[in-house]
Structure formats: structure tokens, C-alpha cells
Length: 145
Image (cartoon, rainbow, N blue to C red; front, top):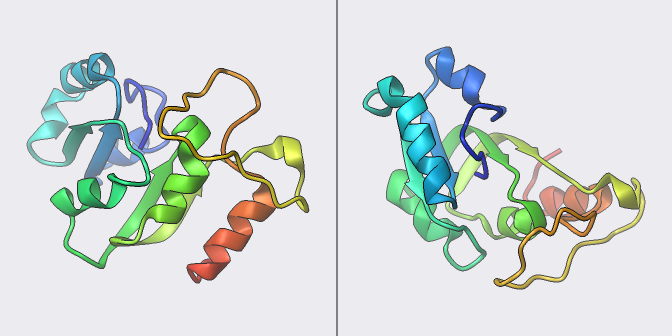
């Protein structure tokens, strides 16, 4: 989730090594570039979904491509300001490993998250996501270590 054109996505190497998966990107221009640059993977390994994810729609989007309570190998999520809240809202899949961006500005002991707003967009500032401790606490409740 949140991969721009896929060129610098942390899962691109997995795709190139015969993994399969779903990429979700909000920008239709970026999705067009993905479809052009990764066209040979679209039929066999790669599904691409174009939509802005929020806490209300993330599970419906994932359900289009996964069975309820599906085990998946990897979830990578980096969607700027909403990363923490969207990851917290995911309940339809069970990733074995989660890769996510956290906000290092707030250190390892402060429990901090941005206020959630569907209209919020990342403004290139350090106001995004949540602290490492906030992610640890949230993921601990989901039985991750």
C-alpha cells in the first residue's frame, strides 16, 4: 500500500523473484505507470488496485482480493499521514510479517499518533503516522512481536 510507481517500492524485488501480490496506490497516474512498467507481471503475479485507502474502506478493498481471515506472507504499508490508523483498522487478513513506516521523531518511549482525518494529506512535514511505541502497542494487541 502506497508505492507510487513501484520503481522504489520495497516489494518490487519480491515481484521480480516470482512472488505474487497486490499493490494498492491512490494515484491513477502512478497506477498507469505501474501497469506500463510491470505489464509482464500483471497476468501472473501482480494485481494493482487504484484507490485512496482509509480506515473505512481498507478491509473492503482487501476483501476484493483475499478471503476473509486469509494468511498472507507480507504486508507493507507506507501511506504517509494515515499509516498508523489504517494498519490498526486492518482486520480481514493475517500477515505473517508487517513492514511499516513509523515516525522516529517521537522516540521509542512516547505513545504518539496523528489525529485521524479522512481529508488529511501528508504535507512533507514530520506530522505523520505514529511513534515506534504507538506501533508496538497497537501491534502487540494484534499478537505481533
